[in-house]
Image (cartoon, rainbow, N blue to C red; front, side, top):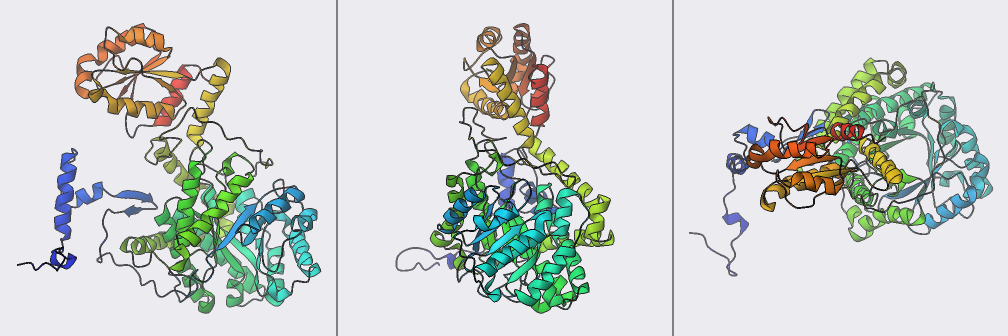
Amino acid sequence: MTVLPADGLSLAADFPDPSHDQWQSLVEGVLRKSGKDVTGTAAEEALSTELGDGLTARPLYTSDDTSADPGFPGFAPFVRGGRATGNTVAGWDVRQHHALPDPVRLNEALLGDLENGVTSLWLAVGGPGGVPVSGLARSLDGVYLDLAPVVLDAGDALDPAVRALLALHETRGVAKEAVRGSLGADPLGWTARTGTEPDLTAALHWAQVCRHEYPGLRALTVDALPYHEAGGSAAEELGLSLATGVAYLRALTAAGLSAEEACRQLEFRYAATADQFLTIAKLRAARRLWARVAEVCGARAAGAQHQHAVTSSVMMTRRDPWVNMLRTTLACLGAGVGGADSVTVLPFDHALGLPDAFARRIARNTSTILMEESHLARVIDPAGGSWYVERLTDELATAAWSFFQEVERAGGQAAALRSGMVGERIAATWAARSRDLARRKEPVTGVSEFPNLDERSVEREPAPAVPSAGGLPKVRRDEAFETLRARSDRHLAATGSRPKVFLAALGPAAVHTARASFAANLFRAGGFEPVHEPASVDASTAAGAFTVGGAAIACLCSSDALYAEQADAVAGELRSAGAEQVFLAGRPGEYPGVDTYVFAGCDVVAVLSSALDRMGVA
């Protein structure tokens, strides 16, 4: 007999613990109702999600899902953070990126950011997108360099940019031991971006200078963004960052630094995506892997990886860019929970050109709100102990270490870049992901799912043109659909209307609404304007409705039962009325009058590209 507490409510302890088999049995019942008759482990696999790199997110994790001991915060293997206090003292470093060639405008943007929550500055210097080295002093006018660390992104202008920055510190009386930040030297990352041969001379020189004169300044950055931005997976990003870090350790120790001194010259930069759990696991796995490298090199005490997380540019969209605010918020959350030391949130209009003041404010406030209002930084390793996160961290670290070993067997990072191994591996990964994007297995809200053809375009000042380099490409998730939408835009500009598709809905609303909504969403993703008037047609009314609607193609929408009765007759009437192509929303069947089928999992990009081609839309 169960004894109830005084308030009449039962306690959790009064309920028996369900077993895994009981849970699985309930899952089988739910799947059976949805038409999937699977049992045992197949039922659990039906609810699993492929993450790439051979990893799978299962629907349920328990204490049986063991993983490697993550240790304690601030202690090797540093999975739970490089510092015992985590980010609880002052939160993570809010680091904003600036790429403006005009020193005056750049100075205004820097001061505005610093006055409103940014704690360090990441500056593009030299090249078409950065401020000239000669304008660096004017750009930093009014900036308290002893309070606001500067991180350089200077590419092949590293040497003059560093000299100008250090001279500016000296002129303003900043003591050498008080200088903070990073010189951002990354010869191998520059090779990945440009295809040029790596030259470590300047990087090694400045590492020696930092070691002897600037103890708080790091000379080198292991930037994994080129690999992420080319379409690489999380494990590839980690593996290549390890290979780069090891290459720098070899060069630095050969130049006279100890292994511990060499480790302290490195900062690691990773992409943070809207998949917050994968981002959390990636940062935790990165620290574990680097701790192992440091241990093998005899630098266990210096094995805490210093991390800079940047919200992914690959996930940023040009259409409906306001959704980017949600994406960057999730990415920032993942970076913060994952233990990043510094976080850069890209403005929501990053893909459109130079960000305006509003976009920069939203970007910096994302970190502020998560830290000051959500108190995200007040907990050390908040994801620690989660069976899912710990298992994902372990599996990702294993996959990344395996790829790192492949790169080492190929001769190291420089040799792997030179031979094309890195480019080929990443290209294959992106090709597989592109297929998922085209089939909407990886949906992009506002682009491939729920697009708004009537949205007001967001205009921004174009960013300075960057000459095409010979290195790894830069990709975006919205690329294929953006091409379709651009074709639609050109047709609208030339004719005054978008390409139209007539939705020939058969039967009552209860029968056709689901597939009509599906088809409308699918065609809008390619810039087609759906015409659904009248709400329902049959063989006697379809031709007239199609003619009035002004569309060039049509799509049948209804149930399988009504398709069997009416599809061929209605398709014939539509074709006689001038339909250049007749689609059917549903799985392929035996309907002679239908040209193409659209269904969940079909190659939407290929289908819609072909439709635009047949309509003569350039």
